[in-house]
Every structure is written in C-alpha cells, then in structure tokens.
Figure 1: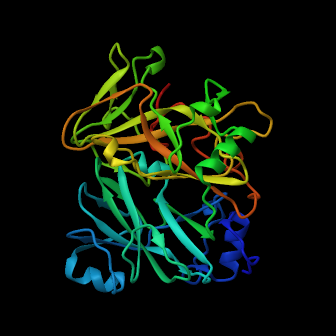
Figure 2: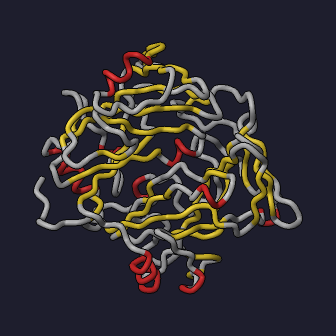
Amino acid sequence: MILPSGAEGVLACQHLRAAMKAGHISTAPHNEIPASNIQPASLDLRLGEVAYRVRCSLLPGEETVEQAMKDNLIDELDLRGHGAVLETNRPYLVPLKERLALPASIRAKANPKSSTGRVDVFTRVVTDHSDRFDHIAHGYTGPLWVEVAPLSFAVRVNEGLSLNQLRLVTGTPELSDAELRDLHQAQPVLFVGGDPVPIDDLFLSNGMYLSLDLRANGSGRAGYRSRDYAPLLDLTASEAANPEPYWEVVQSDAQDRIVLTPKRFHLLMSNEAVLVPPKYAAEMAAYDPTSGELRTHYAGFFDPGFGYDAGGRFHGSRAALEVRAHDVPFMIDDGQRVCKLTFERMLAEPETLYGESIGSSYQRQEETLSKHFHTGD
C-alpha cells in the first residue's frame, strides 16, 4: 500500500482493504477477515482461541506481552466453541486474530466498540514493547492483544467475537478548535432539536463538548443504572436479552437532576445530536477529571456518516454516554457538559458510510441500551 507523500488522515475502508491485501493487516492462514468487520473508518478486531486470566493489568515495556504475562498468569480459558465466562473485576489478556506490519508512516489506535462500552466491559489493546494502551506505534510489526475486564456483568465470550476496533492513521489529521468552528459553520456537526447549535454556543477546548439530557422527555426515564448481582450476560447469543435483570431505570427529580451512585455504571443520553460528515471521523475523548467526581470515558469511534443523511431527512444522532461516579455520590444536572468529541480528517471519503445500509446499530438512536438488549418500546 503506497500513500501519497505528505498524506494526512484516517484511513477509510478502501484503504483498510488495500492494507490487508498488502499484508499490513493479516491473520493466520485460512482465516480471512470477514468483510462485515471492515467499517467505514475502522476494523473490528476478533478474539483468538484462548483467554489468559492475569492477576493484574500490565504493560510490557521492554518485553513482549507474552513475556510480561508469564509472572502474572493465573488461569487459561478455552474460547473455542461455546466460549468461556469472564468474571467481573478480573483482567484477562486475549491474543487477537489480527496482527500488524505497519509501514513507517502509519500508526494505529484502538477503542472499544460501542456495544462493548454500553455493557461496561473495559477493553484496551496491548502491543509488544509498548508503554501505552490503545496506541500503536508507527511501523509496528507484531501481534495484537486485548485486555478485557468486565466491570458490571459477568459475560460469555467466544473465539471470533469482536469487542474492540482499530483505526489506521497517517500524519496529524486532528482538527484544531478553530478548524472545528469553521467546519461547523460550513457544515453543522452539532444539533439540538433538529437545529444547528449557534456558533457562539459551541464549547470548544481541544474538542467539542457534549452535555447531558436529563429531562426524560416526560417518560420519567433519564437513563439506566447497572444492577448488582446481575445474571450472566451472553455476548455470543443471537437473541437480545431482557434488560430488567441487568438495569434499573434512573429517574430525574423535579429540577432535572440525578445523583450518580458511587461505583455504579450509568447509561445516559447526550442533549446534542452529532453529525459526522463523510470526509471526517470523530472520537469520544476522555473527560477532564478536574471537572468533577465522575468519569465519562469509554472512548469510542464515531465513523463517517454517523448522524448523516444525504437527503437531509434528519440531522445528527444523539450519543450514548457511559458515566461512572468515583468514591462519593455525585449530582449532575440537565445540560451539564460531561464529554467531548475530537474530529479528524479522513484520508479520503469512505466508499461506504455509517448507516442502515451496512447494518449500523445506533443511527438515529433514542435508546442508550446496547444491541444486546431488547427494549420492548
């Protein structure tokens, strides 16, 4: 795969296919990457045959992941067939089926899939000789591993299941706040009630901040909170589960506020709807911890076409926000800013965009629960 000199951008689906053909992304012989795993600007990564339960999270530093894991290994689980159960609050290391042999001009980054974050399963990609999670160095050649830690529910997983995604990037395509403001002025990317957010109402600081919708739209339901002692959640099941044993409804008070229960996982909805134009990609960034005793970070990729309709029939899709308070109860208000999006240029417009045509699960979403649950609404 040859890129133009000075190229900058996130690689689109057609580039990912070219990278696979050139051997920059590969798998074991006779184990082709499914076409459905190639998203507009990312690749769904697949779990391998075995999961290693380790006593603690780790980064390999000067070692390979396999070397660093040896002194921390507790158990080995077979993921073939029906798979295995991963228990809560225990880290597991799983070799992925995909491996990389990147050109010197290309780096990669990873994030949990949206459906993974929404069931409170924490994932991070680990590579050999690295001191950072989810960031893969320019020119990296070697295997990929994923650290998996279910936090709210014990989950069943199996070989081939995709819990996280990979993006390839060349150059520095991130938009500055000034560039993001210019983009919104030319092609609005943030909406409330179907109307573009006025340019002077944007809150920008190394990205575009989103706020909470806790008004519950008259339903009394502002979101969901994970239940303690929930049953096993089978992520390999073809049928969606009943959410009631796993989630309790969060109701806002008369002032449109809720109190986050310490340590419990909450699913809430953004007030704003996001539109990612075809020539751009977005990513939810970690929330600044100085802004309060909460964490809104299961950083996720927003592919080109999220919230976009070429015919203008709708403008934007709201974002599901995964929120956890730390050590004390924490009150949050309707309209409170709790997360931000960063935008990047695509190397080229993808041949396919996020949306119904490729089976995307969360276009025009008004429900925070993942595709693993049926709502009955």
